[in-house]
Image (cartoon, rainbow, N blue to C red):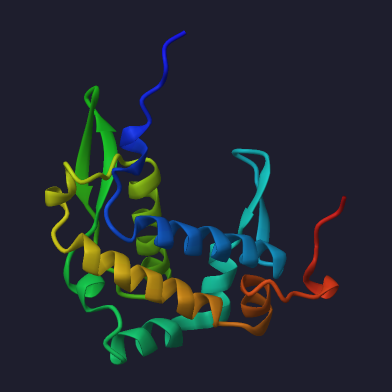
Length: 167
């Protein structure tokens, strides 16, 4: 049996692993804090981003915009992979303008890193990706602070009252 070359597994844009760790922790924290729903498509539990969006409202988006935390994300369109005519292509997305589309933007950055083959070779297709990644990490941190139960779960200090898992 030949040995597998894993060198490309490290070929991610700088800051990607830190972003992914924070995203993973946030998604876990949402579910632990009760922001969880059943996914009929995949028959599993998933984070309820829509409920979070409703609970934090447009004040969340407006605050980040007003404080100047997300200027690149608000001014430069992100891209998403599509499959058309037997070809994988990148299409631009609309700019975020409300909390729901801002959350979608963060989730899309995660998807591009995990599923979209983002690496040092094709990073030039994504102008200012490092700035976008830094801003997305800030959004994650603000989302983690958006409610006390989410914050406590994110920090690993949740009590059993938030634990909705059954053995």
